[in-house]
Length: 184
Image 1 (tube, rainbow, N blue to C red):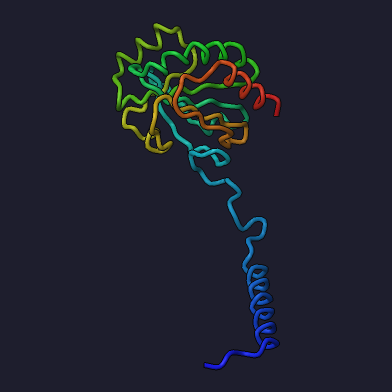
Image 2 (image 1 turned 180 degrees about the vertical axis):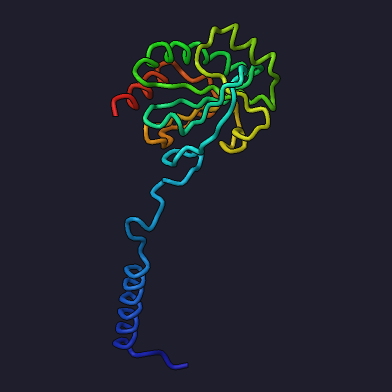
């Protein structure tokens, strides 16, 4: 088979490059064509998936009702040692920052725990923030829970700013993230 002359190869290569650049330009995603992280997904930079759960006394709490406030969603169980270790720091942060608009939703993975143990855990540690009961594991599944504890720092717009998997979470990290979200 006969090869093409050098000039023809250069022209064909240039034509392919121009066609490729034109295709990239035509098929680009323009602003507004993507979700820009505004679809719910339990990952940093995405809108936090909404949920509604009850407390032990039957109060319904919906995450989306807290828009405009920074929120820490913490998934835990009573039998989890790192969960027990980080709760005092969370309680102190709640006491220090709640009046500034900060909220904690402590979601007990009740489908992996039991209600009496969860209630005793909260009483032993004198927790005053809302303890929500995920009796069917819906929030655990929605937030793709893989390790306990798992915490989601959610900004005023409802976007997940940081995910902390495992623990115990340090008090310094907790306070820094809360202050950052409050200052925005």
